[in-house]
Length: 195
Image (cartoon, rainbow, N blue to C red; front, side, top):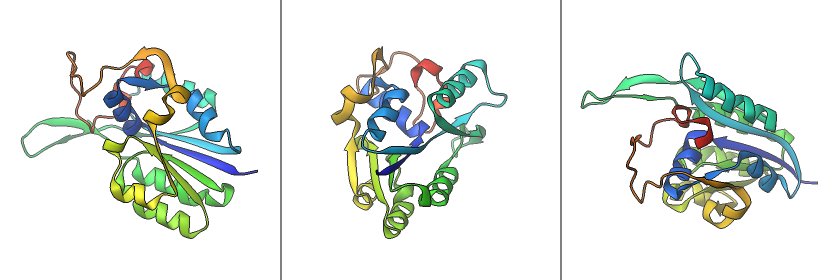
């Protein structure tokens, strides 16, 4: 039986959900991507505020109870050239570390992100005989990452299998009358129900 490992870039997936205007059910994501084999592990990567707030704690706890291994990093404040302050955190190193250090325990890696920074690790995994599936939306997936993967899955094509029913996020393409968060803002800043 094929051994499957799932790696979810939380901020990237949340940004995709915002663009789509609908949200993901993380339990359904587990079920959908592990349906063809045995799930080795499912990793979820997200930034968290310091100190962590109750809503974010409930969200990460819920993921843990669903079966995810949750990796977090604290959000850090930075200032851009224009003097604007924003909060961000990168978990790319954690994702790559888990992709490579656990590769002997799975046959297929399912990577939910469109970030082109993962092109080289995907190539390394494939050179080691691993199958790599990348899932995101076309407009947020780098050509290089898509080209490096064995298979690409567009979230739009699997919506019925992974959507959280009855819950909609305001789509960025339709405009958002509420507060606008830049693309680099972590999903950790959102309400737990928004992810």
